[in-house]
Amino acid sequence: MKRWLIMIGVVVAMVAVIGGIWGYNVSRKIAAYKAMGTPQQTVTAMRAQTDDWHQLVTAVGSLHAVRGADLSNEVAGVVDAIHFESGVDVKEGTLLVELRAADDIGKLESLRANADLAHLNYQRAVAQFEAQAISKAELDTQQANAKSAKAQVAEQQAIVDKKRIRAPFSGHIGIRNADPGQYLAAGSKLVTLQTLDPIHVDFYLPQQQLATLRTGQSVTAVSDTFPTQNFTGRITAIDPKVDADTRNVQVRATLQNPKHQLLPGMYINLKIEIGKPEKFITLPITAVTYNPYGATVYLATTKDRLGEVDGAKPATTKADEKKPDAAKTDANELFAKQIFVTTGPTRGDQVAIVKGIEVGDQVITSGQLKIKNGSPLNINNAILPANDPDPHPSEE
Image (cartoon, rainbow, N blue to C red):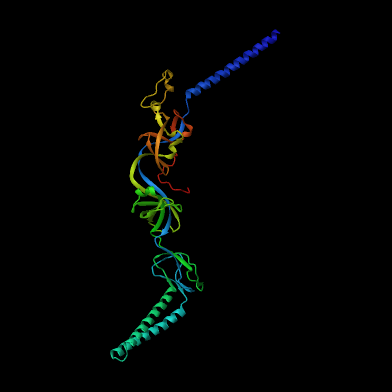
């Protein structure tokens, strides 16, 4: 029995020694972790500064040619010749298509001969009337015959001219829809002709914007087809009537299109600057966190300003006073401080701050999800969030 008690005592002593050693090691690790403090969180930050802010009105418009038409034939006939290539520029009056007109031209020559004869008969009648060889009624009859013959020539000439389709204005010709030898009924579409530079864009704005619109106002347009290029122009017309169903007013702008990149029928995104530019503190949208109780941002600030509220400084505790010098906070170390802000309008990747931030404040622009009030910070701006007032899509 005594032997068993000795063995149990030895085991208990060994367990106590092992437990003591393990507890001592754990306590040392905890103390070391506490001595290390809260690890720094890596974020990006920028100094708040003011920027010129133009009020913008945005809209989506449809492009229309300044002059555009689908050319067609007024009279039926067979295509005799085509005098243009698809996709080229043509001048006003250029002959494009000829319909077969031999029989019409023959009839025209016959009518011209009759008109010449009627004119000669009228001249003879004038001489005879002066010699009192014929009556005034006979002279009037010959004059009417001459005029009628001349009118028949003009009518037939118009029919012949209608079989020669010419460009009604200068512009860019499209793809032809007819071939030589093809019979065309009257009104068949032959080809489209469009004047592309400049080009109109029509769009609609709410009636509330009427007070800010005027002719001559500058317009900037961006097409999804050419996302990196801006097309500039001016408002040239404002409809004098508001649509009673939508309460929108139609506006027309004219854009410069020297390379013929914009085509009628395309849609385009428009921006119109209104009013005078204002000064706002501007931040990337990523810097602002929107919550049900308000919008907030984090500032990167020093320890002495971390707890400032209405000018009050944080109190120093006795525990802080007893810390060894090695554990004291570096004067240059930064901490996160959350504040409420009032936001204004947005543009591109940016948002205007109306209240809550002063020029020069260091604002955290990304990494807010891993920090809270008092979190120590490590600012690394190697990769910054987007901060473009007028961003464009990129394939890169």
